[in-house]
Length: 196
Image (cartoon, rainbow, N blue to C red):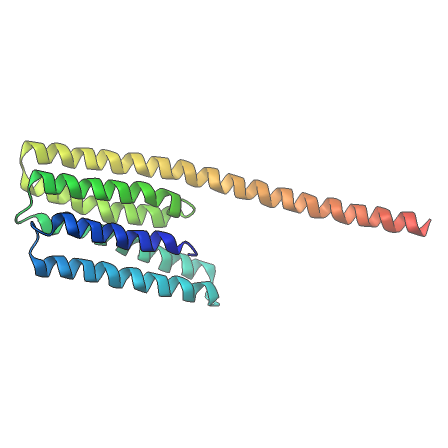
């Protein structure tokens, strides 16, 4: 929740996407999507700031965090849906490239909590696959299959990173407990030595 740079980079990439797709998408659609993206990111910034200071139970904070990640993924997933009426192969390829970059980058920001990352990943990739399947042309069908395969691979990779991160945290906690135990033993020995 402290990683505000991720939320801000999300908005910067969205602005760049709008610049590329401004001739394909109607102006109202473009403005609506970027306004929604901006509102979501600002809300996530304020919410993360508030949750860090709130007394909510951790489980509730994680649920809220997961919903925020899902909404962020869905905001990216909306982009190919908006392209459906007039998008070209290049537009869909660009949208797929942006979603691939965002979901790959999301691993580093979200792998510490697997449900949040999966919510983000599925929110971004499933609408893209569905949009491509709706077009029912061989190139789009192939792209949809590749997107689904990519999502599965990212899910597997993020699970690996998540497990590895949890192992490291457990080892650090065990090391910290052992260090405290050794420090207490050292203090007992020092006290015993001074009592002698």
